[in-house]
Picture 1 (cartoon, helix red, strand yellow):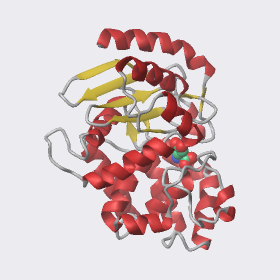
Picture 2 (cartoon, helix red, strand yellow):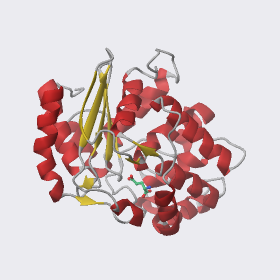
Picture 3 (cartoon, rainbow, N blue to C red):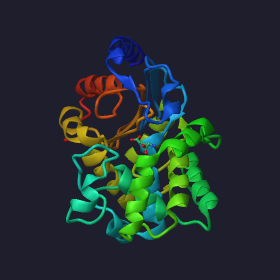
Picture 4 (cartoon, rainbow, N blue to C red):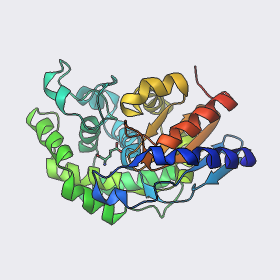
Length: 304
Ligand code: GLU
């Protein structure tokens, strides 16, 4: 398997020049655009990897699935989904347009920025420091690495420039969907997006989801029902407005981030983490998607 992955990464690396590293958060552009790596952890304890699987990058939107789990544990499913929908949006990740026009009167789902900012606003804690610390602790726990922390340069870069997210936050507060302080919520959101991880961490978290919320010691960390909600939303909404095509061609519940990571959950079988910061026009790792397409076909990983 490792030999196959070596060949796959070598081959797909040729596609990285067709993508573009995200630069709307200025600090994100300081990476090697041709990095590409994969890590697979399967249910029997096997590990397979190749390429830049241990290079650190920021988790970005992949953190949205972690905050969703924590928010459901904190507030219950009903409360969280009274503030955010469960529908694919068909719009870019940071789109603002449907917030005012949709009859739903709330963000379409928790995996677009507007929905994720709302979800973060519901995380419990006496102040922003405690809220963020709870998110970080949760991600440390499910990635089984206590050393994870944020990349301060990326965090500062986004809090300085994230005007689009700030607009989403203030609009949602005006609508009564966010009840907490917007500036504090955004600070927690920018920090959660700046947590540094590797493809190996993504595979560990993905395996935890593949095992319906059990860690490597088989301890049940979260309720399987919450995991099911998260996996279903990943399948329908996890790749921005490329989610439909990804579901048809690859068929694995996944979540991408503009840092170049993709976390993929093959239920009851394996967790896969991919890293490739050169993105396609939807904001997903271009070569990463290509790697997953080939892997899914070869190993027959599509869930449907
Ligand atoms: N921090 C990024 C933002 O809110 C995350 C976006 C993403 O990965 O899709 O713009």
